[in-house]
Structures are given as C-alpha cells and as structure tokens.
Length: 490
Image (cartoon, rainbow, N blue to C red; front, top):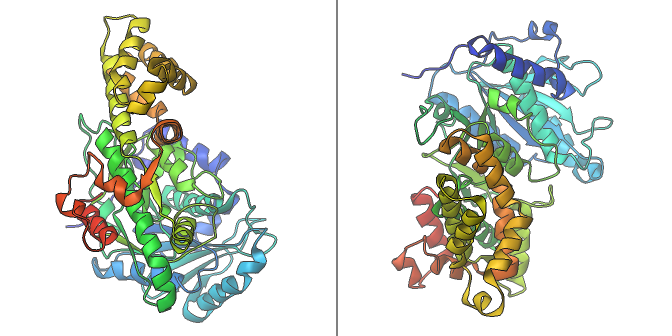
C-alpha cells in the first residue's frame, strides 16, 4: 500500500513554518512568487510529486527524460506528477545554444498541450503549464533575452529557480509529497523513482537527524543514438570517470567520513523544509550540487538509496566548467595523448581514517589539557606519513603547521566549549569538517605527501578494496571494477 503524506505546512511546527515562509519571502527567486490568484488557474487540485530539470540545448535528450518520468505512473495508477523544466541559456553563450533551445520550444509546441499560458509573476520570464501524455509540465523560459542566466550564476541559479517553484507549490498545498526531486535531461529515472521517497527511515542513535536528502543510485550507460565512432571515443573516458567517483566515495566511507556520497545533481531529492533551511541551491556556474549537499548534510541525514539506478547517458559536455561532461573530455584527451588518468593515492584515505579517529579520541578525552591532547593527536597520526617524509623533515612540525593552517585545533576547542555532550561536540566538529574541508585536506596530502597514482593502480593498492580476482589484472579492468562497485552499492 503506497502512503503519501497529505499535508505539508500545516503539519510543521510554527518555527518551521516561519522558516519556509521567510525563505520564500526573502530568498526565493522572483519566478516563484506567484500571487494567490495564479493558484486558482491550475487545472488540478494537487500533484503527488514534483521533479525539476534544467535544460540548455537539450533537444536531443529531454524527450527521453520525460519518457522515463512518464513511465513512473505505470507503477501506481492515477499518480499525478508535475515536471518543472527551466529552459535556459547564458549571456555569454546564447548564440551557441540558440538553435537547440528553439528546437526544444518547438517540441513542446508540437507534442504538448498548453493548459495555462500566463502564469508568470510580474516582471519575470514566461511560464506555461502544459500536459504531455500522463504528466504535467511547467515550462519556465529563461533561454531568451532579457531573461538569460548570468554567467557567474549558471546552472546553480537554474536549479534554484525550479526548486524554489517546487517549494512554493508544496507550501501552497499543490504538491503532496514534500520531496523536491532534481534531475537532468540526460538522466533516465527508474519506474519506482518517486516511490523511493515515500518510506522515510526513522531516527536512531546512528541517525539522530531526520533525512534532508536522498541520493539515488546511478549508472552511466552508452547512448544508443550516439554515432559508433563517438561512442568508441568517449565511453572509455566516461567509464573511468565514474570509476573515479566511486573510488573516491568508497575511500571516504572506509575512512569513516560522513560525506561519502556522489555529488551529481541528477541524483538528488531534498526535503522541502531542509531546502528552505539551507536557502536553496547556491548560484554557481558549476559545483552547485556539491555545495548544496554540503549544506543539506548539516541540517539532516544524507541517505544513499539502494535499488534500481538512475541511468545517465554518455556524452561529453562543456555547459559547465567542471563536472561529468568536462571530466569525460579531459580523460579522453589524456587517453588520446597516450597518458594515464590518475587518482588520489589510497594512502590519503588511510591518513583520513587516522585523522578522524584522532578527532574522536580528542573529544572523548576529558582528562588531559589541550596542549597534551594536541601532542597525543599529532603522535597518533604521525605514523600515516610516508617513509620519505619521515626521513626529510620534522613530522610533527609539518603536521602541526598543516592542521593549524586548516584551523583543526581551533575548531576542536570550539566544539568542546560549545557542546554539553560528546555527541554534540562530535556533531559540531563534523559539521565544520565537511565535504569541502575534507577535500581540502586530501588535496594537501596529495600535493605535499603522497602524489597521485594511475586510477587502476590506486584501486589495486587500496586497503579498503579487497578484490583479489580484480588484482590479477586480466580483461577489461575498468568495466570489472565498475560492476563490482555497482553490485556493492558504492
């Protein structure tokens, strides 16, 4: 029996209601500030679920994404889904995507039926509600002047516009399930995509906060419509890129990090209240998913789902300055030049594991003074330094300089001082030492200590990936490692 939560704002505590209302009033994008009279124009009392998609030059990919969303309704009869699509172009590259964006608009005109055409708040871009097959589509058109996206705000602003609209409609009682799904035009969602957010895990000692974000399983797949020579060129690079993502997440998980999950905008669903609490997507030209998850992790639990994956199509892309598309291009360039794609040395994860254990011990130790605790902390992680480092410098001085530069000791003191319990101190330090600061530490370790290794060498020498059958070095090891990771939900 499928259970859908029937209310949202009325079920919130007064303080939480005010959090959502304050966000919508002060921080939401103007596209979401509908007057109440607009709600009366909507042809349905409510939708069950909402999903948002940014679309820039996606005429070849967007119909397939919508097809997969429409297929979700076959699992539960009479389910109503609203898909918010933010068509967009940026001020620097409008001409580059003009034709593809015009094709998208033409596709909507040809295959969709307009339901309401004048939903836009005053002085904002056009918004049109359409229907296609069994889903409703709200099109927000920021692909033409004067509504083009500022270059420095990029896809982050585009995702924020869609999610702000979703939050407004949830708050207004027009969307029942309070999870804002966000995906992309090159994503193909599984048929139980929406149902996976119905059953919320209960809080426990291991998960004291309710969930703020669900992260769907994923798998990159070949694009059957891509020319064979293009597939042969880019698929190996994309497979290596996915393998790198999974290797990094596995290393973080083994080290005991709370931030061991992929940062891919196609895979997210966030709780509406949590979305308001972190003030939405950051308006960045790239990396908005990483920083958004970083914020969400501090207000709730990050839940990595298991089950059918979201399938992400193979394609190189230059829409954003870094991420999957650019990573695929860069690896392909290395491959074509006869060079090897490198990854973090697995010893950085050994160091991180020791570091996080030392943090736990520091916060548990109430008998020693801070100076003595600092010496114990340094000596406990000194052993993770490579032999070459031990021979050429004063280990403790180097470590102390690094950890002081990163403000580690300062924030350990602060966590102890501000918290009344060990759990509170650990939580406060963990919020500070977040995914960004974890990555910053790893980059210091790479640049100053360990260097990098070829990706397959890193996999084969890692203490946290015990796969004797893959260390024999036979066959297509990239594909074999990928299959192993996917099977084990990394």
